[in-house]
Length: 131
Image (cartoon, rainbow, N blue to C red; front, side, top):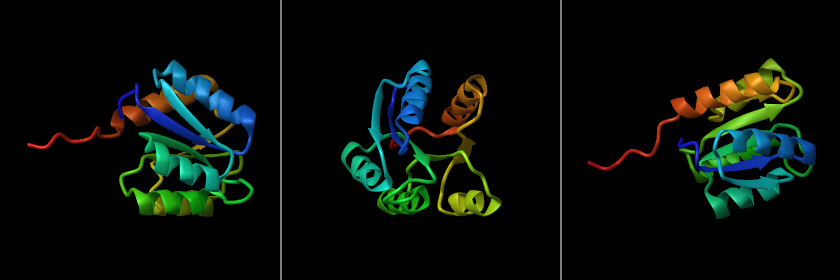
């Protein structure tokens, strides 16, 4: 993914959305869309078609795993990174099975988060040009 692409942050906590937004902007991502729950997030995904989604697992109204399923059904190529403060092996496995690129704990120190996102984004293939 180009580091100047569009990102969507779906999280019910405004301070988390702000923090992740600041980190993404420091990486050069200029367009950031936010949603407070899975229903709003899926609608925003359909409308905005972002290059990257950072998706909270635990949210009211609709959780992240259900939202991940919807996004991946709508766009099988969607690049989704899950966010959580609580990690269980079952949730990590289910997110991976549903096509999440990676799983990040919200308490990851900022420096580690920046390095991890840079690494993940550089490994994500850009749209292939037709030959």
